[in-house]
Length: 384
Ligand code: SF4
Image (cartoon, rainbow, N blue to C red; front, side, top):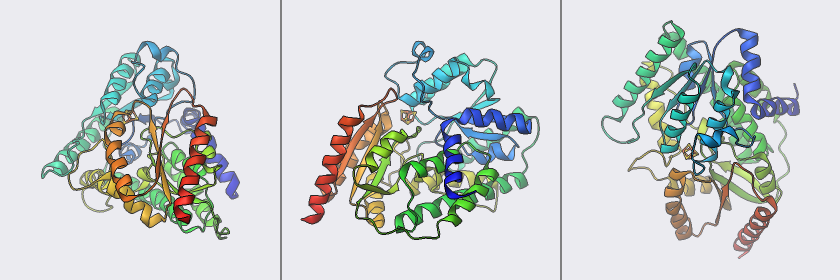
């Protein structure tokens, strides 16, 4: 397949994850396990010979879900409940979720209420990341999750199978990180929406199938694109759900090249590998902790890491001129943390723009004017 065909395939899966899951299930006769973002180790469900897929926000308007969840919950949780209430999750054999915010817990309860025939497995993760007992408690959580999975599939998940899945997932992450490196270095012209298709489809597709296509995609970028004079931009934030493609396209149409991000449907998802040797459950716990040092998350508490310091460092390394923060409306963890980012960026004199996104759609023309103005400010600062 050539480069455009591979990206088109990733885009197709990213746009209709449940159709991919249904086709995979019909083809293989195996079970599909949906999981909530952002801390579920897909390696475990993969080692149990199922398809792990991270459940995605739907583009569809929320209808029946209105009667189940408060309208001031984030678009992701409302869309999850709406999809559950309208029968869209029938393809799933089980749903797994670990708590990471109050709204996610509310959505999980509502889904449990709606999908009475679907196994819903809950695992509690410690959110305090730098205590002496964090590693041990994380191991306990992932150990219990493994027990629940074994109970669900009716078989043991062996260490050997788990190690094999860990190696495959690491390989997949490393290939995507290679794309990030090439984009940053300017040797691969990958648009923000294309990067999202790559990462989002990795959350859904059979990992071996995705990795084979990724290898072809990475190898296809042999030609260095001409250096562009666009404003170099870092995109930040947006947990749980992918920013809408039209928003990413609009931002890049304003004379901007996205050179880095810490989006969940981006670098945050593939930032950290799981150790490939030793006890695999201890390795998953290590991964859980290392991720928060690699790309700090405001849903976790860790005294010795700061998201704002990470962002300023990342931008220096990416030679980014400015940052656009994408914040999903009603996302409490992000709303609580954003003032710290704002203060740090203003203190450091680094320009940034906050855009609040909505499930129900956004007035793109008005947003475009704000982005164009921001780009002008960045250019004038650079010139000065
Ligand atoms: S972290 Fe934010 S986007 Fe994710 S479920 Fe919680 S409120 Fe929604």
